[in-house]
Length: 346
Image: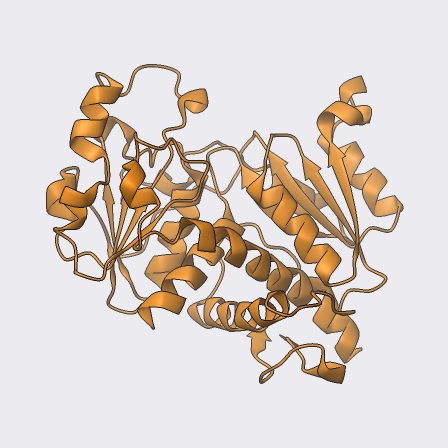
């Protein structure tokens, strides 16, 4: 089966892009093929064209019901999923743990089964425990599940929007040097970005304090966010680790700084913030070591002045705000590929 972003009734402009299928869920990027990633990014470009219209509304998901089920706080991811669904004319229901039967002790499984019985089409779930979206996907037969972040394990839609943003500016990803710097150990964004950029043909270098740097070649290294997701080795030969940022950033095409996730750190992983800033902050001096047109990204929320210097965060090289806009386009593309295109074909 092929799902496509169809040019039906003038809903989307441009050529239809086939996406290898079927895909029922979006749980991480480790099971995406390079062709599927490319097709998804191409479809996001069609969605970005919709966002640039005066009237941002198309009927592609009319009659579909999407539930955002968030057990953790979120601004960018949650609102962008809601906006994506509504632009595509879906009915979007926001659900939080604090305002539902979860407060009364209802389990994740029973919550999922309840939503399935109500006839929802997609559950977008963010959960503090790694593996929670996988658990729902295994147990719900009639609902598509999208992982909006599970513990320190994965954040596939963030990874895809980062790929889309980078490709849009660099013109292509094969052979590009991508440096991801900071708290990789606790970053679900980094884990998904590594899979995505590496499968797209980029060379990925991880940099940061050794105490915040999982070994990607260690069995289970990219499943280390928890015991529930499948634990696997990293088969990607184009991923390496260089703790010295000054060395890692030499000749880089793209630098992605990560947030220091103090809420997930159970002990001190570096001597002080001052020491972290001195050795691993992305600033003008360090970006001067990268390629002249190197770009800066950050998944947000950003500790400005710590992970990235303020002038660089708001400078010409920064794509941070554009990442947010592209997040809506990527999530529109994924929602359409999961439940919209199939309806058009049927």
